[in-house]
Image 1 (cartoon, one colour):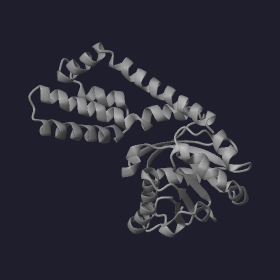
Image 2 (cartoon, helix red, strand yellow):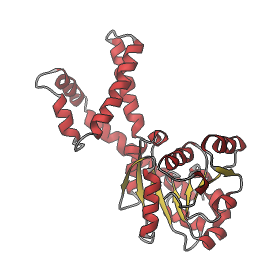
Image 3 (cartoon, helix red, strand yellow):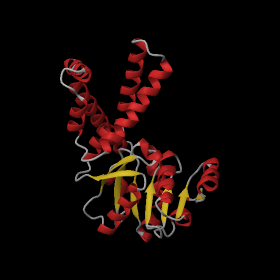
Image 4 (tube, one colour):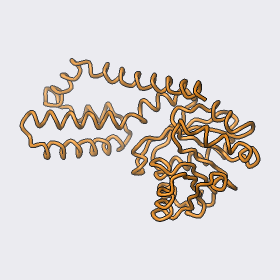
Length: 276
């Protein structure tokens, strides 16, 4: 991986997260070139991460084995279509982290014979603690799949999904998921304040509990049900709280939230396709 030339188009949050992770995992800065339209962002990338950044996407792409598309979904066509002749000559793998943009659309913009695949990372990737879903059509070669996985692993956990439609569920679960946990921590802190704790104390405890629970969930066999049961003493405080959540149909609320997010992911993808 350290000697694989990469082009990353888009130097925003996710592009920077990937670059930082790749550097931490051993990729040398001289093997990463970034296409970025904003001058301030280019200067920051060069100064803080030591990578070459240019406004010329064609120059960033030249000779790259993998092109990581890290622009906003609505900008994907404008970025890829002018590069189509070069992409068809050089045939890099195009790995898109642009949410909702389907492989069929990527292929149409890149042209025949260009391998495309998708990744759905989440915001904790900025800290190297991300969760990324990967999907590749059948024609993507094993070596290209392996390269994409190594790139995604630079910022955290990686899972493969067998169908592109599964990425809508990945979006609902891990893509949007951090917001759910943060909302729960926020509401817990606010409820603790209503019960008498000082606000600063409540926030500190909620954040520490959120962080510690994540570490606990990552430990051992990751059996979430067993871990929860170990915390729940018979007729104790935790059982009382969980029974209150069950009475409020907490399970149904969570299921409804994920279903709504997955449905919206599908709707946005349809909108992207029709707007192209």
